Length: 249
Length: 188
Image (cartoon, rainbow over the protein chains, first blue to last red):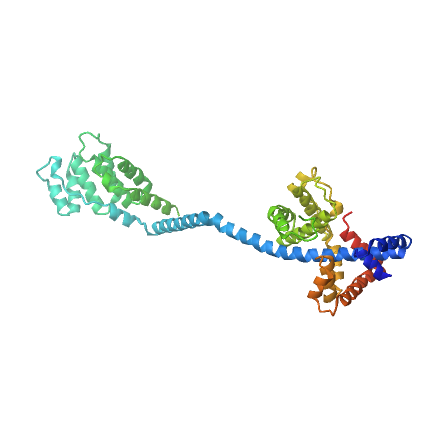
């Protein structure tokens, strides 16, 4: 009987045979149950086959979608990654430069770099050299100071040369005091105004008074007409700032 | 295309291309791994094809909405089974809750489906080959004869009957198994 049920189930019965079988089937619950079981079996087989096919497509599609994503990923990063690398490299170089600066900038080095030896200037309207000038040019700084102390009413030149002598003798605070005195004189008629400003700045550097030195050098840097404008660069200002920072640690 | 007995792999690939991203995101956003997302999607596709073939999807909702709901219910069901707290619902889920079709009764029951495949696996290679060729690939006995070594079509027919009968007997002996098959494969 089972064979007949399967024949019916598979649709292999002819018209008359099928009609007769269906009549028989309608009266027999066992046959109906067996037929139901065949239907279940077929559904299970179809599910199994479908799963195998979908599984194969699934594998293929997962490979394909992952490959597409992998292709899209570098595309997305094609510009971002190099930019990031460049930015990172610049940052590293910048940080290294800052660190290098921070470590290598010292008051002595900055002072040596900024120092300009003052020579007696005959163009300032004084052609006949005084004793102080002669001593200054000879490098006899102690004598310059000795002579300065003897002058009752020192003028701008005397104060300036004495200041230079103090600076040469590494007595920066005394030099600064004289240059400050000079700067208190009115600009007009003070041929040493610009020199006094620059050398006051140097005196502060030598005395390691960097916060006092900074505004002087900034002023000279901004003032293109200043005699010492060419001596002050951004690097000078940055180095002074670094020294201010270093002094805080 | 999915309604046809022979599977259109292009139609299935289109489903993957169009909906895998959206559906897998839902799983991944709701405590699932990438592998969970792939597994659930595969189950959803199998179920969708079976639902279409049983005429249970009549296009009342868009394929996208239907698949999304199927995916959502199936994954939440899977999570419940894993005893994971479902306190957190993602924004997607909440947002679409009012508009999605109720497909909770259609959701993928992976365990029941596994029982089906495990049962078919017990058939043995030859039986599996013959029965799949006949009932899934819709090949004629003549065509199947070329795939398996049998003396004649009649011998093959007898073998096919035996194979089918062995499956039928499993259900006859174990009505619970028949019930589980029905639950897994009938999208009522």
